[in-house]
Structures are given as structure tokens and as C-alpha cells.
Length: 263
Figure 1 (tube, helix red, strand yellow):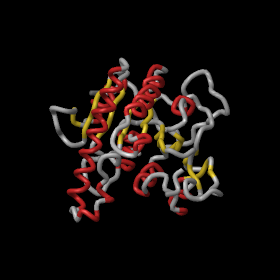
Figure 2 (cartoon, one colour):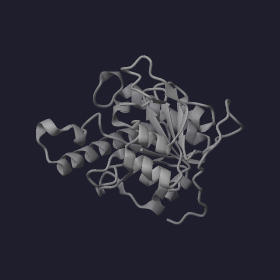
Figure 3 (cartoon, helix red, strand yellow):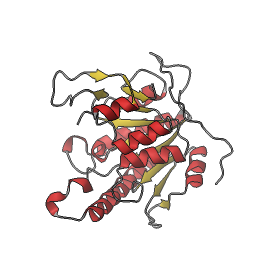
Figure 4 (cartoon, one colour):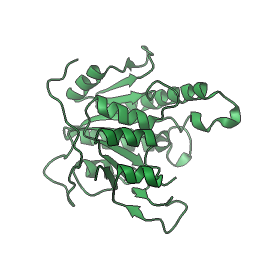
């Protein structure tokens, strides 16, 4: 994997090519964003499930940028618990396996919500699959209103449909809520021309276009998500979540990670 997802009184337009300075400016360069977290990002060093120290560290950074006035929506994956696309050995039918994976994202969303609220951060968990006892159903205007009120919105259950990844869900939700950027959190520094965890000579690419990502088969996000971002000129920033403070650095405009734009 060459890695390195009520009425509104105002709207934010997606910025095709935001300029990032080499040092932080006076304030955040993004007002509303989608943070894409993989399920694996929550498992920490234990390699499975949810690691307490890791999820608390992520929550602290999210709360920090929220306190800067940034409106944050989080799309969370479920690969630390169950990943439908990797269950061929179990002979589970794809739609059933994907449904199990979507439920795993809800588990992660509940955990993230609990940790954030213990830090004094108001949140709302919205699910693409209706489960009223656990989460609100995803309604676009309601999600936007929560953001405007300063709540962190956690978007779980992907798109609610099989065959669509949480990367695609992140791109779709970003369009719906009029986010300015998708921040794709990974465990490497950005986008590389080869897997940096396997190829020592892999070279990081600081900036590239959507078409370059697709044509070169770089595993930034799946091709459906990248194409959706390309069609709507929504920038993607891929960065290393394991470096403390990186979320704030990205939001403040520092050159962190790799950026995918129209050109």
C-alpha cells in the first residue's frame, strides 16, 4: 500500500488549492473539515481493538482544534474490529461482511464520543444506519447545525451501503456538509511512490493531482473517493497521525504531509 475519507445560515465553499505556509499563521486556514480516521489508527501498539492511550491522544488533538474555532466532522473506519473486504477466508457474503464492518465503525464512534465528552467536548454521533438508541440518523442539515454549534460530529456506518469504503463515505460526507478539506490520517508522513514500511528508498511526494493519484495507483484513498474529490475540487491532505500535534499543524497551515489538489 503506497500510503503514505436544520438550515444553515452560512455555507463554506470548498477551496480547490489552499495555500499552506511554512509556518503557522494568525489562525486556522480551514474553518470546516472532515478528519478521516482508520479503525487501525485507534488500535495503537496493541495491534487490535481500541487502545486507551491512543484514542485519548487523538481526542485531545481534535478538541484542541475545535477550541480554535474549527468545525470538525470525523469519519471513522472499523478495521481494528472487523474489515469486510478481508473476510474471504470466512466465506461470508460480501454484503453481510460489509454490514458487519459498518457496525464496527459504530463501536469505534461510540468509544471516540465517550473519550471526547469526558474532555468537555460536545459531540454528536450520527449513523448512516438507523439505531436510535445509540446514535442520531445522519441528516445533512442536522449535521451542519451541530457543527455550527461547535459540536464535533462523528459520522459512523460509512455510507450505509455495502461495496463503499469509509474513504468514500468521508468524501461523500465532506461534500454534503460543505467541508473545505479532507484530512486523511495515516501512520506514515504522507504519500509515497512505494510503501515506505517495505521499501527503504520510497520517496515522499509533497504535492500531486487527483489524476496522478489515480493513474499511478497510489493508495491515498480508494479510487471512488479520489474521483469524487476530483469532481468537486475538494483537497485532500495526507499526514502522519502518530506525530503529536500534527492535526493542529495542518489546520494552522504548516507544510505537513502531502496535498492532493486539481493542480
